[in-house]
Image 1: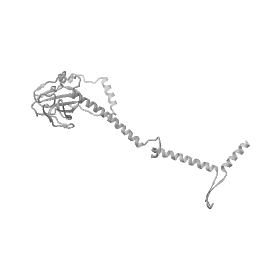
Image 2 (image 1 turned 60 degrees about the vertical axis):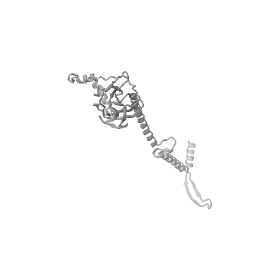
Image 3 (image 1 turned 45 degrees about the horizontal axis):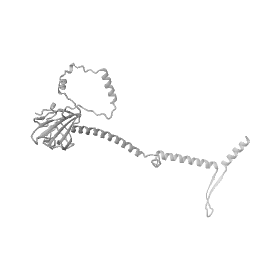
Image 4 (image 1 turned 90 degrees about the vertical axis):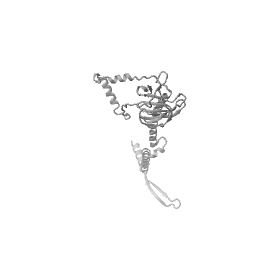
Length: 289
């Protein structure tokens, strides 16, 4: 026990033993500075300096832009730019997919690569004659639950857009005798209407010109998108009065009757009508006489 006390006193004495640090001029040995130190003071000072350096380094790395120069740390601005570019890339990919499907539908319209789709005008007329008062329009329990579920799912849908039903009144592009009727089995998805050359051709409804170019087989061709999935096609024209991207009004002159293209056998209009990618008989909706 006495030895331990002696050892403890010896260590304490060493820690508290006074030393003098003197800074001299080497040439004149003049004393410039002097410090009175002991081992404990030096140890405490070095510890505090080390802690300060560690804390300062952590602060610089965590809260200043200097961390961007340290390997392993990325720039905040670079991260934000990468996220923004990622969103833009995703949007562009979606837009490209939509455009590819759209152009594929146009290609099928031009080449006649479609499957049969019948539109029965008589059944539509019969349905319109039904008396709504004799029909039970009260929603069933299952229907009410389904509507409630869909309403909850779409309540916070930011990408939902309101749409409304559009009823089209189709305007006859020209008046004349029909030389060839619509025939799906023969892949003649149109009617051919005879008219004198250079007779004005009018738009069947409001819309946007999505194609207006020359083709070897059908001459000058114009395709107009009218919205709600409706497209009209005008072939064998002698000239076109509208260009791609222009807006047209119902009854506005868009082209003139011609005899252009390898498949033409005289001045006439080859008129097609498409709905949601399927050909329909124009005479079911338009009177050409």
